[in-house]
Image 1 (cartoon, rainbow, N blue to C red):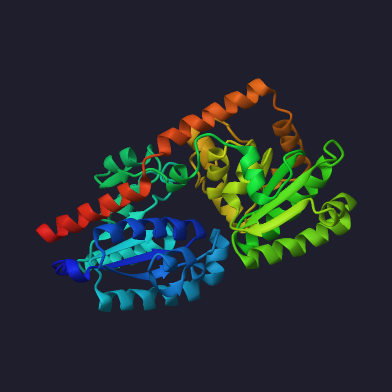
Image 2 (image 1 turned 60 degrees about the vertical axis):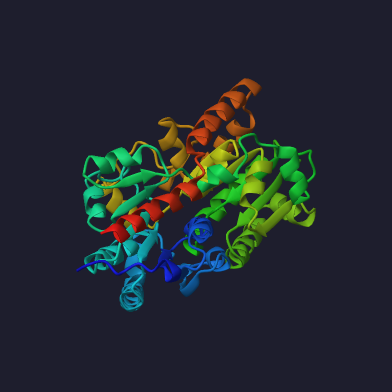
Length: 404
């Protein structure tokens, strides 16, 4: 089937983002595409950032935000219904290009169906082919005409399978400063310059927060004996996440008098949308593996990564050897070294987290300078004006289709 005719005056661009981080990526891409195509229409699935950039959101992005193999199974009927409805709407709308942003389990099948209808497809954010089976890259190529990669090691994997993939860099690396100014970040947040500040980020999903916040907070309470000036800052992805975290904090405060004191003395700050500032202000961080770990590396803050998935998910991953990478968190993968301690599953205990955080806070000036330089080297590699490069890659595909 031939591709739909492109009318530059009424260009239709469909996007689907299923994560908070994908919503930010999508918004930056829309902004850049609008410069090139001021009359274009943007529609699909997105969050507040993409809506603010001009997306007509047929569904909100949090409708897709499900994590873990067993969790996906629970929500599978609803997700299948949503995808079928979205697919039919896209068939009828006939976009000039479809851009699936992350959420590969949802987007790749959708992209394949659209590609078979002659609609050009782009997958933005490569699935972790370096961690899972590299042969998966060929299957991704059957869905996406082009893959936009955030990390430099990814295009070569796709090229070996004949898939068009482009390294565009990471927008977070563009936004975050190369040189951290902790005093300025504390001033932004209204936090006193003195004292030890710990950033606590237990994830954006309810299941992540429930599994990680209790251990993270118990670990923080253990640090109070050696750091009586300790303050906590907890950036949250949404008001719903904030409310859930604060409920878990109250439960932890009932177990630990020190945490209750932090609350009553104003040494706890829980707010939405302050992640870069909070990490830039902190002396150390404990967080869920994911985009937050990359943000922590870009902020050059010593970090401990913790993660716990549902037992069924952990069993499947271990039994079938699904993860091939030596490391779980992105900073360690990019460094090809244990830049940040990883405490996963049964190792993600309050005692082990507290010990790793204590080591991070006790870094010598020389060790801290070396850590900062290693983070800065990766930061410079990823700093490529990603929104512009991603928009260029989309434009090239549109021009290629128009030339046919």
